Length: 318
Image 1 (cartoon, rainbow, N blue to C red):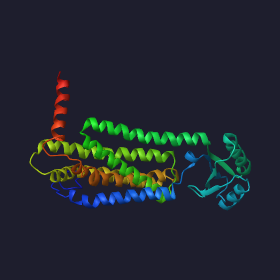
Image 2: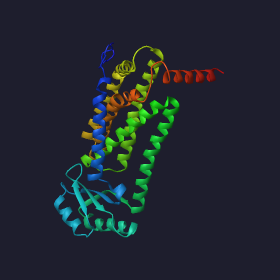
Image 3: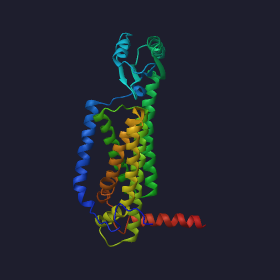
Image 4: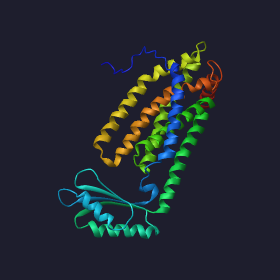
């Protein structure tokens, strides 16, 4: 039985010639993402700004969205968002943070139950106070930064400093563009979004490390070809793996985005964007940036990597 090959073995596509286009394009998109984030901001969810989320299911055949909105507005709870959620019987109701701390948030739930419990079943109630929301913001930010720092340290020991810097630049590129995606689309940014960002970082770095491993292998194997040619050879030799992995993940995420419901739709859309951007950055950012960081064929990185591997193997033998 023949194995599936989406990319022919003799592919010799010249990726490095596009670096004069990919670098300005990435820089432009990063600037647009930052400006959009500062201008529009993000649609921060209850997790990070505090408030109450209630999921209701009508006891009858269909929920009356207009009536729910009118009743909720009459409770004097401030800004209230009401929207259909999933089936026509389901409604999700969001109430902003109330003054008075956790006690005021608890009163919101009591008022909502008194107003809607006769006609609707309360399927989910989430209350996030101001102190908890601030802690979630801090912990989420610290988690992302620590992940990037640990990755930098690992890559610095695993490879030479050029590879570590290249991987971190590509990762920051993906992170900034993903934040810009949230700002442009106004998809709700909550704890699930932090999970999506960390997953995107992991996916992008995994793809980058696969490419860098092949680059390091060929740096030791070939001593007389140019770095541009060697990088193109590395890209083409890992292209089949990259394409199959990306398509598999994309197909799964498309199915989840369509059939998984509104709860995970934002996560799936962010992941779809992140996989495309992560694959792009591994090929058109992480690899060609080695040219500008001073990697040389036959010396430096290749020699150091070879000496490191010999030392590890020698220690294992002893």
